[in-house]
Amino acid sequence: MSKQHSKNNSQKTTSLGKILTLNYGKNLIASERQKGQYPVYGSNGIVGYHNQAIINTPGIVVGRKGTVGSVHYSETPFNPIDTTYYITQEDTPLYLPYLFYVLKHKNLSTLKADVGVPGLNRSVAYNEGVLITEDDNEQKNIVYILSTLQKAIQKQEEIVNTTTAIKKSLLNKLFTEGTKGEQQKQTDIGLIPKSWEVVPLGKYIKFFGGFAFKSSETVKPGTSKIQLVRMGNLYQNKLDLTRSPTFYPDDYAEKYSRYVLKAGDLIISLTGTMGKEDYGFTVQIPEVETKLLLNQRVAKLIIDEEHLDQDFVRCYMLSRKFLDELYPTAQGTKQANLSTNVIQKIPFLVPGKDEQKTIAKTVMSIEKKFATNEKKRNIYENLFKTLLHELITGSLRVHKFNFN
Image (tube, rainbow, N blue to C red):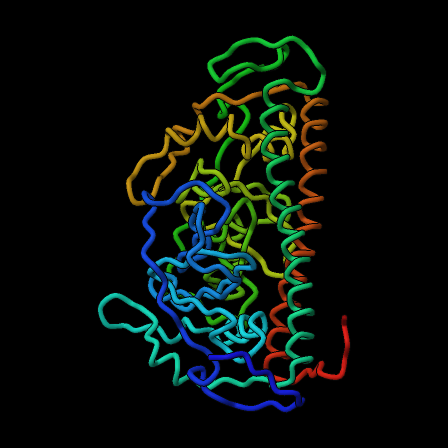
């Protein structure tokens, strides 16, 4: 296809086959790639780099197999492998970056075949209807708005990742060197400040296990404010109540009052992915609108507050020093299981109470910055989704504006 932009502000419905050509990617196995600057794209995005480019212009990459229908844009020459399709400016009459957003909005993943190996069939894709604007200026304005927002999202993502890395490094440093610059001593769990104790975790922490609530007694969401906290709700050290929400009758708060959680409670999952980077299992209950019930295989920590600061306990349980002691105790193949009896025997660090609070305050200041930037990123992402839909469908028109 040749590049032939029209000069009006009209919108029209057409088929993908009339506005693009999907070209098959090329076979470029990992063993044949030489270290270089040109990205290699699979269906799920960049999978490596090579010292040559198969396609010497910018282009769009569409997942053909694997992550079917995913859409990526390369601003540089690139290498699309054989699980993908690719599109260059020569393959469409539209402004290529605008076509990228049209395809991103189209959600081509819904077109994947169910027979044999799932894939995106070109003929099926070509027959799909799509709404476009033929106005050059509007296409470029849409790209300007959405790409600017994507850059803001990427910037926040970089800050979030940097803050995460800083937190991990800080946790390691704090639980190895402390905050007072004192001499260190060698222990079974490595170097620690000389004045710190190493005790069995169970000396100052006990566990209260959840109840095996019956699935047959659940109620529909919206009919109750009594929600169950399951191990799946403890995700990346946060409480995520949107993951498979499960509710019980309102009278369960009184009937099972000993299993009701309150804001500030510290809980852990006893089953799942534990001890792995970026997957947490320790959560402090925040203020929420619903009343929360503690499910089986989730346990509440009962902390001896005379000797331990709860915020310190939570921070220490996020550190590699603690996780490296904990994870080897897990049993099971498909899902790792922790025994509270075993957990209570693993070594636990105990600085003085004042230093515990200083450590917790330091870590929490980093967490606060992380939360702020994560919130910004989420706001930008939601705004991007809204504007992507409104701009591509034409409910918001920008053909009369000039952003250049």
